[in-house]
Length: 246
Ligand code: NDP
Image (tube, rainbow, N blue to C red):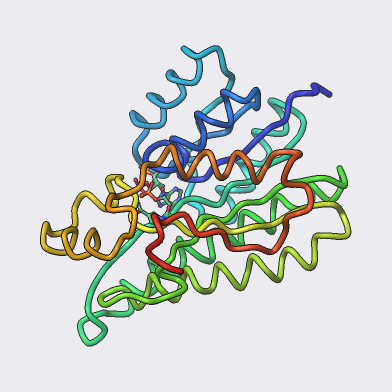
């Protein structure tokens, strides 16, 4: 077995996931970039990794589908023989006020942002258990802690992800697997670029550091959490939000 660690990053093709994939590859890990539909973006991230001398591959899969993730696990193990790190990052928003939110908006967000993390963790943790070692980082959100108008589905999913993180941290600790959540505030990605200018201005006025965050800043925190230096940190939710929530 190669001594290089292997990481799976869901939604690793763009935004925060892309930045995490690049950081992990730059630190010498092999990275499996999981994307749902935008192959071009996933391929672009892989090329960036390779241009920097790193190693990775792309895997098309929907995190809400057991079969898809089983195929990813099979593919990664066939290619590299091990899985050390899982970053549950894939996520979507379907914002609507509560009285306008239909079941489909609710289910789509809960399925992707919460159940997707369960499916990936459920299928990948067993390989970490075999190795008696592993790092899992769930990308939650400060919205899971404080709620937000128009995001009852997203707030519920991210709050659920925080609870899931703590339960998994307790269960998996005996095999030396740490499970933590990172809760970003407003980070400049495609997910947030679509927001109204008025909404953005309002958010900005509430951020003590006076700016939005960068995907790279979130990636650096994730890199720390998967490192040996973070070996005694588990079950934590670490906010990275310019002081928005304190
Ligand atoms: P983006 O919209 O930029 O990227 C989302 C990524 O998730 C894409 O790679 C997309 O793949 C993938 N994805 C979406 N649905 C699925 C699915 N069903 N199966 C597999 N992959 C999927 O999002 P961000 O980078 O902004 O957000 C990443 C994470 O960070 C999310 O969980 C989000 O909730 C969280 N977050 C973001 C914040 C922000 O301000 N941006 C703040 C707090 C939390 P494809 O392109 O192929 O569709």
